Length: 300
Image (cartoon, rainbow, N blue to C red; front, top):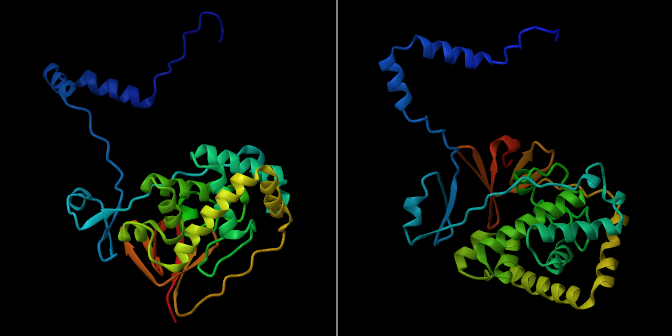
């Protein structure tokens, strides 16, 4: 700027328009406008999940009437986007991770979500036996066996990446702890879903879930008693597991949900409501935003 030049006008276009409108108002009109309350911003609608005693699920954006009804219990989970440490964001596969990196991730996310570190190790041991490419017949994937829909809700872009998978799995486990305030019930909910734990007001009477809870708690004691040596031995399997994940067999007798991430998930039933699809497989129900679903393949 040369000497003596006037300072540039930094007033925005919007401010100039507002100023001009104000100057053209009569004093009475201006005074009336100043007294008006500021407009209330529109709230984003959120569907709350309630379960009846028979296990059926209701979703609503007016939850108060259900909260006052003793026939319903609320089962509502809000996921936050996961955050991966900067040094691991460039990794494309589990084989790139050193064992020390996996241990660091477990320690970090256990601390972030206020979980017992040995409990996280125990869940990974029970879910995948530290195989980052593990895939179940239900469509769960990775070290902590995340379901594609739940992973998508958390912003997971590579479900087989140990950092993203552990981030998503620990957040989900922490949500179960916050919901039930009991370790055994949280572990049961991780396996069978929070709806089942709410329905039975305790560990559901499913053989698989009862054995799962015993196994996880036993592994937790084992890790706690054995210390760092056993942790290192278990985690050392992760970088060596370079074989690609097995393909999911498509069951033509079921729905198949195809996600925008490229992953798929089988379903017994899919219900469309407002901005969500509610995906039911067995006893589990997974709410997923429509924007995360590419298309739904119906049974043959």
